[in-house]
Length: 197
Image (cartoon, rainbow, N blue to C red; front, top):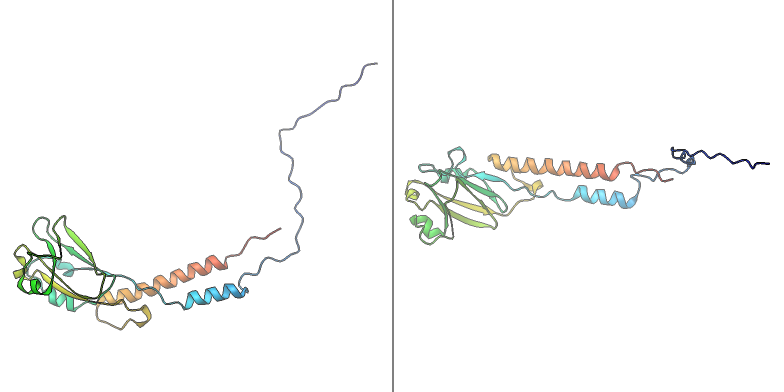
């Protein structure tokens, strides 16, 4: 008597996933963790960082002869971390940092720093004190010299009112950036956590 041969069928479909048991446990609490609340309160109460400002020397008149840079400097506040941008005509002017004596006599023969390439020069005010800049190509006598007094960076909440646009922009920009950063961290920390099964 012949022996029956069993038939085999090979399926190309993967088997269905096993059923997921329903969990009766609750998701982790989001904002009731004492540690999480403490972190958020510390972050929200921390002082916002100060914001550096880039000031174009001479404003719309840039770095050129016959500009009253004393009036320009008197209309601004300068703080550690701010930047001075000297925009000038290429191959005609330069920017030379000098000491007080050289500033008064328009003497660029012993510069602290000298820059003449390109069309602009950006200088970071990295310490408190007075900084002196001149054009050493004879234009210092036509007013191309500026002196700025650099003060410590004030904390944003203590920014005193000022008529300077740069000072108002510094205060407003710092507050809005800090608020946005606080909101982003809050959203990231308080975002719903995935359920664990």
